[in-house]
Length: 266
Ligand code: MLT
Image (cartoon, rainbow, N blue to C red; front, top):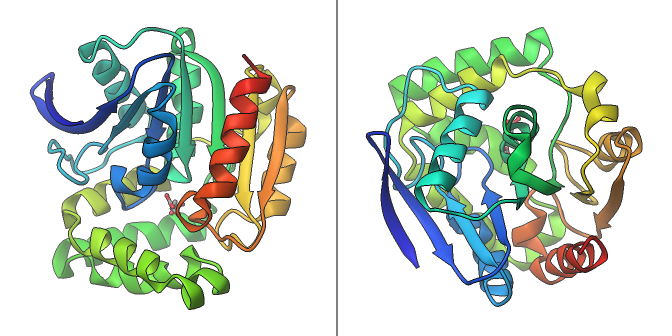
């Protein structure tokens, strides 16, 4: 069920479906909850699935000049409280959703019993990457989302997805084109200053699934394997023939990996 919920003056759009231990699905940049459609369908059979649109994205309002990963994490805690979600939850984030996951665990550890990190990074931006993000934030504010579509689309999918399932790329393109440019700019500014958590990885003791598409061009398998190796309690799964958007590109394989992980860590 898609709900609109008021949280501290912000109006959130969020999928809240199913019963059982809660799984929070946090989307990547600059998308919304629709990227998790296949996971919502599968896991709402056994779990309470919460899949929000983050501040400013999709149908949620409240964007600011810059939104830090810490701010997104605090927003999510308020949302979980407003929805009266029972603790503890499984936190599943993709890419920017993973950057938020680190901050959520650091700031609200009492909420999380396991982590699923899809196609994400522990490192912060290099000075050059950060400066490019700040430039892009200004461009998008003036010109709308199209420059982000041009910059990102070639990096999001494996060649196989682009050739065999072009409708997925089209769905993502539409989502980005419909996204509030101010929210895109705000998240870019937030990601540019996100903390590097590499040195802290040995302190993340939660059972963690580290999942990556074989051809992810943004958070490549070697880098994600490095994250899994640095975490004390992680399992690494690579999804063949998928790219950065693995949960959309091969939902069957991704759902199987998540299901196995949930059973194994029950
Ligand atoms: C995402 O998919 O959320 C983005 O690739 C994150 C980023 O730009 O670093």
